[in-house]
Length: 640
Image 1 (cartoon, one colour):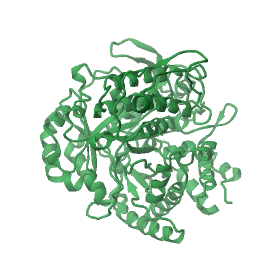
Image 2: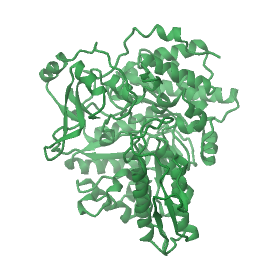
Image 3: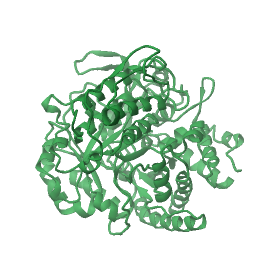
Image 4: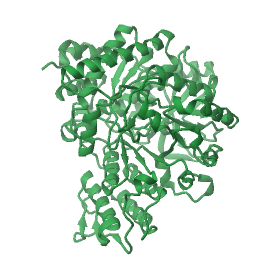
């Protein structure tokens, strides 16, 4: 079996990877993808690549020795990458234990049964993101809620249920709770005496335990939602609340993060008002999902939706399921009636229980059409093999194997050259032919979809390219990253010369639990800047990428100003039905944050900051995951 050897890796140890944004890319790698490789030592970049390529070979990816070594070189020089989950998990025991669930970022599920709530909980606890439907036609299948059910927590060893200290234990408690309200009508008590306290290390998956408190509070809040519907069926907002509470349980007190998208009916006013924060009555847990509506035509969009675009609530996204089912790239019929919804960032339309299967090409770093073709093929071989793995839920294993859906993405689009942009249609045609040939040779189903554009918030920081098809923030800017105050990497950043200061709240008071490191960043000269793009310009880029590259969908958070809303509506009237599969929006606002994630600076300020930084000072990974990139604020999925 071919393998990346230690001697081969040694030839790269003295080389420096082209990390982006003045060293920020290296910080991202150390905090997000580097794993411990024995004792307190953690991987350096060549060792991580060695682990993941050898891990890919272990699951059956048919690389030759030469191919494996070529892929190593491409990854080292940041021309491409497996999905973030692949960087984190390939070559670890969890792949053997969890199969494809350890390598796929996101899922979609229709909420029709108790097991579907469990599916969401399980996948979030495994570090994935989940999209879910709150359509009336789906949630109507849920039974009426039983009356007089009480679920009580007792810190004792003789409760009705002693919750095991495991992901499965937490999931079974949720199952028992919902079963009591939907089916048996029986009350019960449970105990959490076996669950580790907050901060304990999660050795298999990584991160830290959230402790029993998050679970106890979550079960109590779910019970309150259910008790409010005794003798009735759940409404869309009730299902939304339960799923959002589940998301809060997963993320509370832990290094893990959750990403959810809820998709509802276009005429469900109750759902459309679910995140109207200005009322002061919206539960805080509803912040744990982005919300969208299913709208196959512009005419299905109610005036109520646009009320969320005035700054009092959150603007809801739009999902065109009919177009997603009918077309691959725009103008090409590629029928896929298994599609039910989307993953949280909405770049992949999925069936019930289906998962994303991603990889990324860093387009600005590609040197030739031949090189891009080789990279696309090597990523394809790994992605195709992932579709052959088992998953914890049978319906996921079946639909993944049947659809063999892939999502090969490009990022850095708005700083790529015209030549690089023109390669994309050619690579799509090559990839389509490759899939047809390879699938026939190996008796595999053809992939129903092949390409996409992710938001790529975190991965794009490695090489320092613009994320997905989003513009650069500014020509020169400060990128602020938050760390726990106890994180040892902060001192290493300080040693390099980066500015470090205490975080600060809106009241101007210092937060002694969090430190902020400032990274001076310069966007490439050819990168399109946010200030140079209107909302309609961004929509036109979605249409272009949906035509030339993505047969799945294009994930973009369109930034808009209030005076652009009428232009957005007019563009959507003309283009939405046949050009947009998914889109979300975020209002440009003047903020009052004392230390915002991004802040534009002058060239002189940038040069002054850079002059104080010494990138030759080595950084050592310490294996935790306390870094905060604020990806959700920019619309980029936070999942590894």
